[in-house]
Length: 242
Image (tube, rainbow, N blue to C red; front, side, top):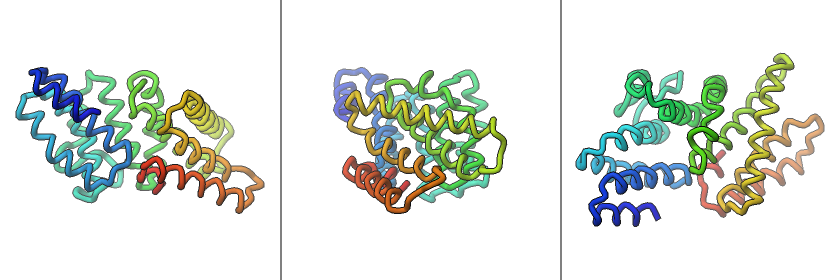
């Protein structure tokens, strides 16, 4: 448990370890689909701890996630470009500050991708999908964010295949490949027994089914109902909403 790890770290004087664990706890809380009100409350409670203990690296790295939650919750106004800009950070200025940290730049763009997808701005999401396509394997491997990235890459690929029916073959092949890669990766994780992934796979499979030429409404409804039920049972309210 990350909160226990944070408490143990503080008790033993391992401040950096404690703050790193706290940062992971806050991010995991968002990824796991806890209600945004609760996630925002935890972030408001714990974010000052980074400053109090002068752990600026962890604080700087958690800022984009907190800003994303603020935008999704409606605390800050969302720009048409879906930039992570609001009370806490200005995305352009923030990325300029972290330009030497390729992993953090990629993560920040991934958070923006999530915002764009949730708001239905698929063109922006697709652009960010291209820019961050290697995030899961290069920076997010073994982390919940890496799993979420694979999931969203699949969602965006399917959205683009649905939206761009008249585009050229090369572009469609790119999105087809990305969709198939995401589904294949999630299947491999499901086979390994990860309990947090089956519903994500079900969602992508249900979405992918709707791309077929001979879609049967009853089968499509069955697939989506199973995906929704799986997300609810797993406790991922964010994915149930998708």
